[in-house]
Length: 311
Image (cartoon, rainbow, N blue to C red):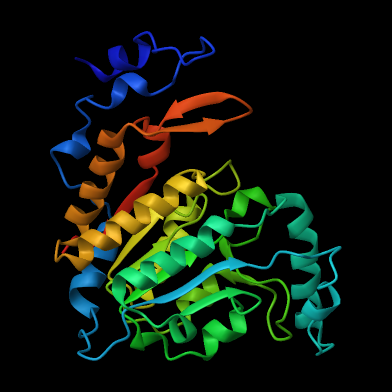
């Protein structure tokens, strides 16, 4: 049955008589049910991965996670704490930029991201005190002070900002803690990532729009920027999102992917198996005040894509 037909089939109603979007899709012939799919930004990236790939290290910590950072700027009590102590023009511009961007993006807290990081740490046997940075600890300064090539897997469970979302000339970025950091502005931008030294098998950017472009000003720079910068910095594969993700499903999908990796499956297979579990479960979640929607709908599982090496 063609996919277009499946989407137009009548939905089964819930108890209030409303249709349940996605309810008819649990048994749909989605390609992911039979194929393991991965992407590359360009052939030059593939060449770089194969030619300049770093040697895998024997002794690495299983995980480094930054999740659920603090977003209390610009009106919260942490606003002053985030202002760099240096009064140089560059530091003042960075502070001004952060304080200007935050109200525009309306960053919301991410409690599910905290749970996601803690659950992945448990699966991989990573010590939380040394490998998981939450809330006020999830700062740029902490990230940049770590021996980043000592970690096999990276997880950033936070908001992602695409360049077109907050003005021309701005780079795509991951948002880290906006307080408790006197050295940085809380935006881990594409150019900064290029200067880091990773040696990771997989980096998970569990955030909104970390792979896709948005609007004319971005022109796909989310994909070509964040993804490529992590690769050039020493990451062999990335799990990224193509549109805004529903947080509880993101937690479920990322946890399932790492569970499959722990079982020994290659990265491409692990993600495909995780998606199949979400689809076949046909779990219903509440949205709005009393509406239901099935997790079999591609809105929930399709945004996650693997970029880079599938092994």
